[in-house]
Image (cartoon, rainbow, N blue to C red; front, top):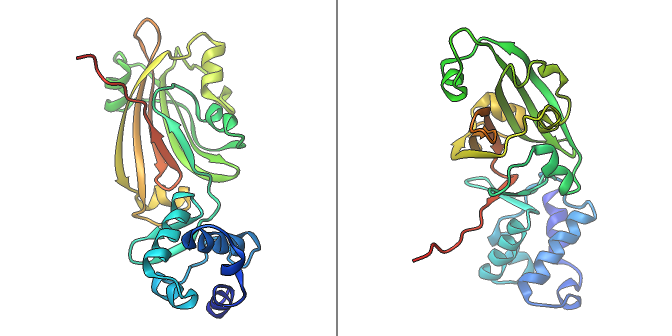
Length: 255
């Protein structure tokens, strides 16, 4: 959509008088209407806040509040130094940190269709990190499965899992959910420890996830255990920073 069409859409008509609610809500709904009607396409840039204020006669404070509301709803994204853009339709997922579930289970619970693109699947010589994490003996091999995880055909995360080969002797059997295969064989983990850190995505991972190199991401390293305390899974995952909110419930400690 051209800049003039955007100007016309925001400047003309009686939409401000017809709409109800606070002024920032009216502006938010007007921009949403433009997106829903296809006037503002996915990833299209929005005018600067100062320009929107001039077009609509609203204050900068009102415009800023409307834009923040759109960002909070996942409709608009803001890139430092570049401005505001219509979101590209990537689902935004709120992920609990208190439940041990698979990606497939998470997406199904939210009504999203999960799929994967395989990056690696086979038996390999373990790295020193895998030997330490999985408590492997000298000479033992490791099963690896690495895949790009998607929701509604949008890339969401890169998942790289390593398991002892007696736990996963045939990694090619994993098609959709790793945890379904582990549960079938009586090896589904019952607890896990996760370490989450903020990162800037390198060019390789950014390319897989469909974002710009240097974009914000989350790195999650998870070690999962069986009920007998044996390590069953060592996973290193890279998540899109614009697609996930990780939520934990906290309780006040007893004094």
